[in-house]
Amino acid sequence: MRMYDIIAKKRDRQALTKEEIDFFINGYTNGEIPDYQASAFCMAIFFQDMTEEERAHLTMAMVNSGDTIDLSSIEGVKVDKHSTGGVGDTTTLILAPLVASLDVPVAKMSGRGLGHTGGTIDKLEAVEGFHVELDKNQFIDLVNKNKISVIGQSGNLTPADKKLYSLRDVTATVNSIPLIASSIMSKKIAAGADAIVLDVKTGAGAFMKEEEEAKELAKAMVSIGNRVGRKTMAVISDMSQPLGRAIGNALEVEEAIETLQGKGPEDLTELCLILGSQMVVLAKKANTLEEAREKLIENMHNGKALDKFRTFLKSQGGNEKVVDNPKLMPQATYSFDLPAKTEGYVSEMVADEIGHAAMMLGAGRATKESQIDLGVGIVLNKKVGDHVKQGESLLTIHANSSDVEEIKEKLYKNITLVDNEVVAPTLIYGVVTQ
Ligand code: URA
Ligand code: CA
Image (cartoon, rainbow, N blue to C red):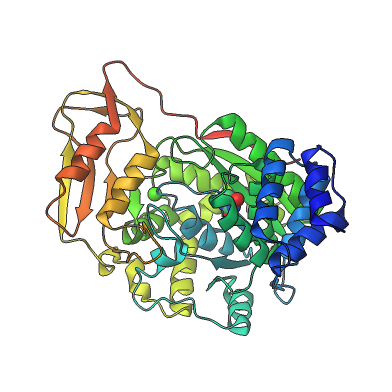
């Protein structure tokens, strides 16, 4: 087999066999196939696409390029949730203890990464003492005992994807549905989940800005998952404005604590109930979505969801007192309100720009070397559709520097007020199960 022929075949829009795809992934991972051939191949895929069958083969070839996590010693159906990423997306912090409180096993592998705020692990590290340095047996024992544990990413998961993603990044081939879908799904499958719930975001703060693209990506990932024997479904949700109110690390943990008690922001709560219901049904802890939803709401109000969060923090060394007193987490020195310059209705809060403002405050990493400031961030006091009086606070900036003029300017530029009433954006654009 020659890589040249495989590139030419894809260039001519023919479907590749499993053997050809395996040949590429194996050769590229071990360095026998050079970057220039892999680049040409990715560009051919970009223009000529892949069949559903090819996409599934590509995904499994990447899964098999490195270690896979075996969760079979954990009882029950292991359901993982993945979000394609957004601004102020606190859902994992809420969903993990919430569904675990209904005995759905949550064996989560999570990361740090770049972005507006830290990843789930960074956020949890706002809780003093909390750590994810567990060995595999401790991790599995914790899930069997408490139904919940989070561990840091293992070193050698999907090395083919790591290498290919870096290459795509510099060859203008990131934005290809078959390549994105196989990249995301390979990581989820290697991490051992039996079933996968995907939250595909659309809007200004999302990877897929257009609803149609988001739907196509959702369908591609659901097809891959189901073809390779993992029950997979996707929800397409709004990311035109930040989700919930808090954007920041300690601030989002505080928001999660409120939401776990049923006192969280409406949009965040609703999205957690929708995703959570799907997870509970996939894990066979309820027969219908309605029944699952009722149970989740019940556990928000009877304290069980919050208790699970407490148990989880404590089991990994965290100070569980933060659950009753979130101010024990790092707090910013200064807070500044952003007063509305006129009366009106909020018609736009551009998610990615507001997220970028949070990153400028220090809430997220601009580069791998950046240090996160756990206490800083932004709390929205108004959301799209809300009425605001002149001088009323649109949001509160939590900063560790008193010089936030540039950030205030940026925020003003990305929040629009209009005279006429505005309806809040749709939260859920669709659900894909096939
Ligand atoms: N996120 C991923 O993990 N992979 C992609 O290809 C794009 C986004
Ligand atoms: Ca939030």
